[in-house]
Length: 137
Image 1 (cartoon, one colour):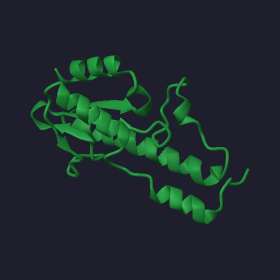
Image 2: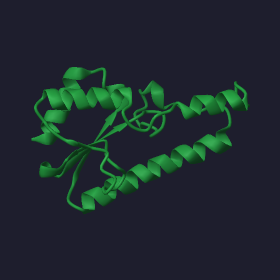
Image 3: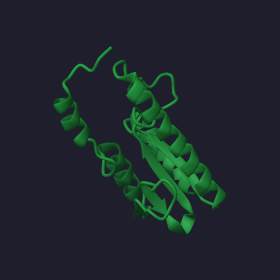
């Protein structure tokens, strides 16, 4: 199956994809702040450049997009694999998953605790609040 839009349009769409300050990330940031936690953002000196860093607690939170990071939950509709241009997309997405595993391992080996929040989880605010609170205690 080929792409459903032309190369120019696809390029335009891909340029608009952000890597930080995304809507899911902002939801998690506002929630953590509202709960009274203070944090640093996108520390490049840490493996994987975590979205939220709690230096005094040695804890980090990654906010993962279900598609880009291939959420392994079979009930997640956002983690579907693309049907077109698979020879490009499948290796790209697999590299993202491997990079996530490597970053998590490096952080844990350095004494950091890691929490991954998935894009599909941000709408369940009560559960998310409980997860973040439990993680940061």
